[in-house]
Image 1: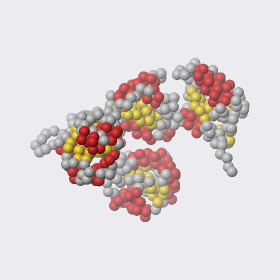
Image 2: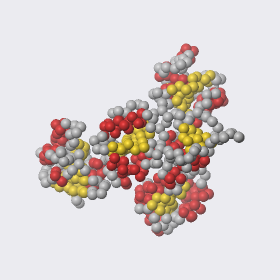
Image 3: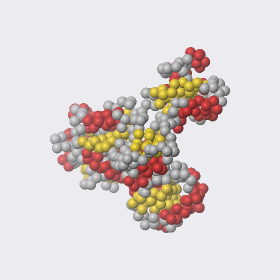
Image 4: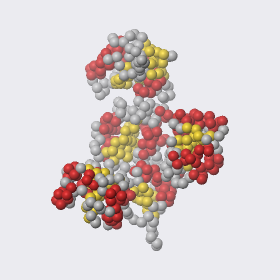
Amino acid sequence: MIALFAVTDAGRAAAAELAPALGAELHPLDDLAALWPRLDAAVFCLATGATVRLIAPLLADKRTDPGVVCVDEARRFAVALTGGHEGGANALAGRVAAVLGAQPVVTTASDAAGSTGLDELAAALGAQVVGDAAAAGTALLDGAAAVENPLGLPLPPLPPPRTGPRHVIVVTDRTGPPAQPGPGTAGPATTRVVPPTLVVGLGSARGVPASAVHDVLRRVEDEHGFDLRAVRGYASVDVKADEQGLLDAVGTLHTYPADVLAAVAVPNPSEVVRAEVGTPSVAEAAALHHGGPGAELVVEKIKGANVTAAVARVRVRGRLAVVGLGPGAADLRVPRAEAELRRASVVVGLDQYVDQVAHLLRPGTEVRASGLGDEEQRAADAVALAAEGRAVALIGSGDAGIYAMASPALEKAGDDVEVVGVPGVTAALAAAALLGAPLGHDHVLISLSDLHTPWPVIEQRVAAAAAADLVTCFYNPRSRDRHWQLGAALDAFRAHRPPATPVGAVRQAGRPGQRVWTAPLADFDPAAVDMLTTVVVGSSTTRMVGGRMVTPRGYRWA
C-alpha cells in the first residue's frame, strides 16, 4: 500500500497525478500514524523538513519501515528520504520522478557511487548479514573489503578493491570465524553473509519435546559448524506432519510420503526405521529430497534424544537472466530489466544494445559485446558463463522470448543453470500502441526472414494467417537483399481481405526517427519498409477510427 500526503493545492495536484500511476490514494495527514504500520511506502508532497518532523516519531527499523519519498512544491525533485533499499524508496523516487518530470535524488552510498552495497549483496542472495554490517558496507564501497565466496554463489558485481583490505566479507553457510578479531589479534574484521543454502531433515519418536529438537539442532552448529541461519527449510516424513514437538521447534515442516523418501539413496539406512515408518531413512532422505536435484548431504544423521537430524546443502547454480530491453525508449524498459542488469556480474549482448544500457551497469561488471550475426555464439557464451557459476544477463531488444535470445540460450542451458526471464515490450506491442488498437482480437506474429526458416514454410504460414482472417504482425519484413517477400505476403492477404483493409507500419518505435503510417491494403507500398519497421495487416473487421487502426473485440450485448 502506497499513501500520498499533501497540504497545499500544488501538492494535491501533484498527488492527483501520482495516484493512478502508483496505485495510491491521497490521505489526510491526521491518518499518518494509523496507516504507518500497514504502509509499503509513502509519498509526501511537502518540504523535507516538514516530512522529517512528521515521520520521525514513527521510524523504528530500516528493515521494516516503509520507504518515504518527498516531492517539493515545484516538482523539481523526488527525494528518497528514508528506506532507500529495504523500503524501496530509491526505486519509488525514480517512478515518482518519471511521472512528474522531476529529478530523482538518491543519497544512499552504494547508489551515489553506482556500486553494489552490502545490503544489496545480501538481498541478491536472500542472505542475512552477521557481524558489523555498517563497517563492512563502508569498507566494501571504499574498495577496502576482500570478498570471499567459498560456496561459489553467483554474486552481483562488486566494487573493485582499491586498497589493502580492512574488512573481510565471507559468503558462507558455516559459522566461521568471530565477527571481530580477538584482543591482541592483528588483521581485518570479518563479517559473514549467510545465504539460505541448507535443508535440515528431521526424524523423531512420537511425543518428542521441542527442547530435544533444539538440542540436536544446536549440535549442527556446535559440532559441525553449519549456521542455522542458512536453513531454508525443514523436512520429514508425512506421518510426522502433526508432530507437535517438531512444529514447535521449527515452525513450518515440509513432509513427504514414506515411499518417496524410500527411493532416496542415503549413507545410513535403517531397517528398524523402515519397519516403523515405511522408509529406511527419514532425516537424511528428507533433507536430500527437499534440497532438490544435486543436493549434497553435508551432515549425516545425528542422533539425539528420540530425534534425528541431517543436513543437505542445495546445489549451487549459476544464474542466467534473459532480459528484454523493450523497443528502445528508456520509459518502455521494465524496471525488472534494470534490476537484473544491476544484479549481473557479466552482461552479454549485441554491441548496440549494450551501449543502450551501459549507464545502468555497476562498476566491475564484465561486458561481452559482439556484432550482428553472432546470436548463436552470444547465447552459447552466456550459458557457458552461467554454468561456471557467474551471474549473467543476456540482453536483447523487445522481448527476449520473441524472435530473440531466449530460445537459442535455453536450448543450451542445462539444470546446472538457474534461468530468470525478464519480459520486454515487443515490437508488435510497441507498434500497436502507436497505431491504435489493431491487436484487439486474435492475431499472429510472423517473421519474414528466411535466415532460420525456409521461405516455403513462411509462405505456408502467411497463407494460413490470411485464410484464417487473423490480424498479422510482420517482423523482419524487408531488407536490402530480401526485398520481395513482403510484397508476396501482402498479395496473399489481398486474396482474402477487402481492398480497404488497413495496414499499419511503425519504424523505430520509441526511438529517434520514429515514423508511423497507415494505408489501405490495396495501396500499401512495401518499398517504404525496412528491417527497422514492423508491419501490421488488419483483419476483415479492422477499421480506421479517428485516424487509428481498431480491430473490434467482438463483444455482443444482450
